[in-house]
Length: 169
Image (cartoon, rainbow, N blue to C red; front, top):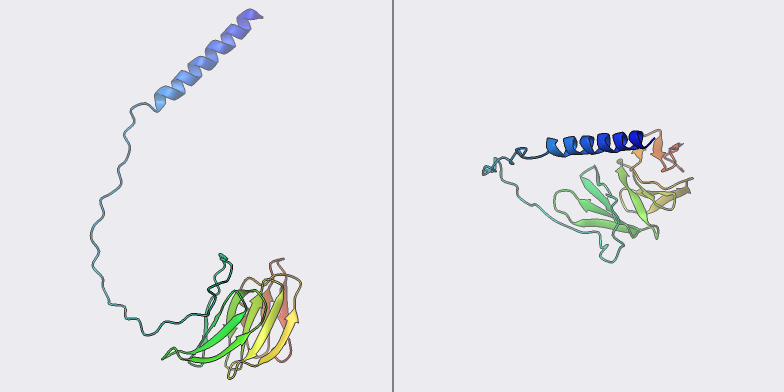
């Protein structure tokens, strides 16, 4: 029995020494030297704007933008939805949902949609920002809806896909 324990211990030590010797004095690949980059085109800022979310909790959710009919729509985590003129950046209208927005915007010529982390989907008139309707869904809306003339599709965090009427949700 004692012989078996000694043999096991010796085998284990030999294996550990072999593994340790394998990593000794290996050459380490050095990173390649960086080469200077020359810009191929010049980027010019046309306009810049914000959605007044300075006091919002920092969430790592990207509220995507949407564009329709020369308008850019942006949402903020504290519930603001803003329509900008695409060419000038002028604010066309601003709406407030009082909901924690998380799903980004989706837009058509007629309406703008935005979802919230408390399971609501809001539809606003694209021309003036008036709320058309809102509907409560079963879960958080973390992605922009898909919108067409006949159907609105929105996926909630629980994996369900909801198909809604553009007229009334």
